[in-house]
Image (tube, rainbow, N blue to C red; front, side, top):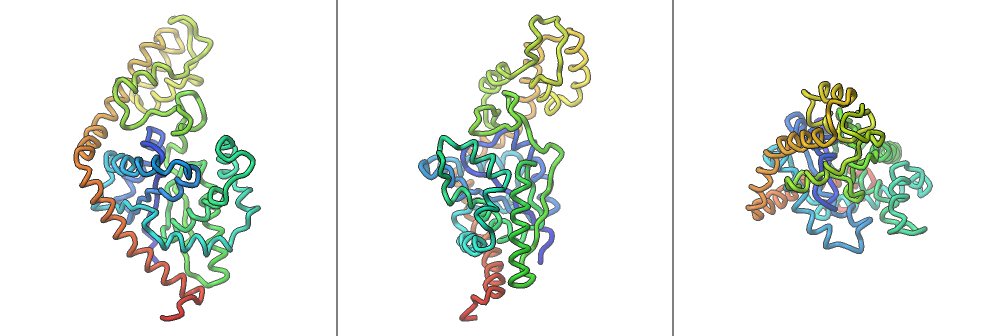
Length: 333
């Protein structure tokens, strides 16, 4: 079994933002030099809460691929593929559904939180597909025999769910599947502009990698600061200021001076925000330039995704052969 394989990915429900950039994208760019890397465009999983808007999912597939390429994912090192084009994952999802109970899925902290956030969509009756998406995710991971899965802290319960399914499968059918490990980067979760503990596409509190200068300026200028600070020379509290929080990400060499001036009332919020805007634009400039390269070459983006999906299927077919043999389903072998 390959113990140097990594799987990670994104749901195509919108462009990627700086939360993804610091929370996962930087890690996957670094790790692609150390691991055989597979990057999933999780369109099937995206449909679990966008079933009534498939066009949204379709339109964002290309956006997700371009964002990954723009930050430095190299298609010669990493395989980018489309989930819906891998039928073995759907097969494994069915097999694994016999190994986990409904009550266990309902207890999953990540699922519970997401269901609560989507009350407007589901009401009091969550769909079978959404409740069971951790089973589908387990199929994604194990289909590629991935040994590590880079995730945010809020996704840890999903990886543990996968590990439970793997242990259950191996206990019944023999040692067949790899039990993956979660990989947490330095930045486990990035807060939103509004101070929310999570920056999210659906929360309206994100700065996107593809945002224009005007969009970034508008968003930063609206970011939450110390509410007790009324005048420019009032002492501020950087610990409760989202602008200071983002300076920690984009202005590391300047953060000490920024915080000292803020606390002493020597730095106004407007000046602080303008400096942050400048630093964000500087960080995102090479990413956006590379993204424009791919925006002008849609056929190349399509080719990368098609070729990646073709190569990905070679791996999942091999895994399915092992699984069916272990489950005594290899009738004509």
